[in-house]
Length: 298
Image (cartoon, rainbow, N blue to C red; front, top):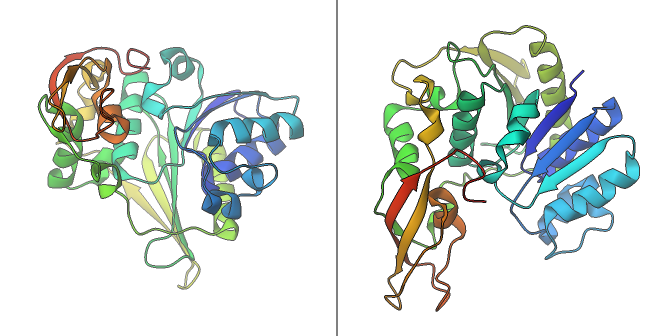
């Protein structure tokens, strides 16, 4: 059984993973999600339905419920993306459950896992049908595949450039460009989260290679396991992951032409940043420095 785990993403899937960990009696669980609670989240999550208030953070609502239902477990969290969580959380963790919904977020998690050599159990819902799901195991070793290894060279380069380039326009639409048309239901979230926990429990006992379990309730057989090999072109295995996430030290607003110093991770600024003078999200990243993977820009 796990002693300390991280959960990235507290939507329908992440909520079910947290509930399962509570039932299993995990010693300590740390949650990370930067989003506010929306009505659709409340409708799809058993955890967030009771007492959940639209406009409040997912983390605060989730922690209230989890601490009430499972008081014997140490629950903590951050209203932040997983890449902005403090380093000690990764150093103390046995495993990271990835319950995010974009390739960019999964690639950032892969970079963190490579840096801290932390196993990741990732899962996703939907696809061409609401009755589909996927669970992937990534051992967190440089000799094994990570999520970025599964991408084409072109796709991987595009995602890595989103935090590698020093000068890049930040458009308001960028935040949603990477989202897939994947939907979720409370039932499928419960099924896939249960499989995610089971895969993590069994694979943590010694699975040294990456693999995915694909679930499709409309097909026969309903599940298929696929092995993954490390990509020779994936840069996350080079051992220099500590400098992957640059911090923006100077930005310019295209709307009012004012300059300001965000001192935030470039990836965060592109998804969440706005001009402190006029509120515009039409920003240019002018200067950046490379610091620690997490914590330096939180």
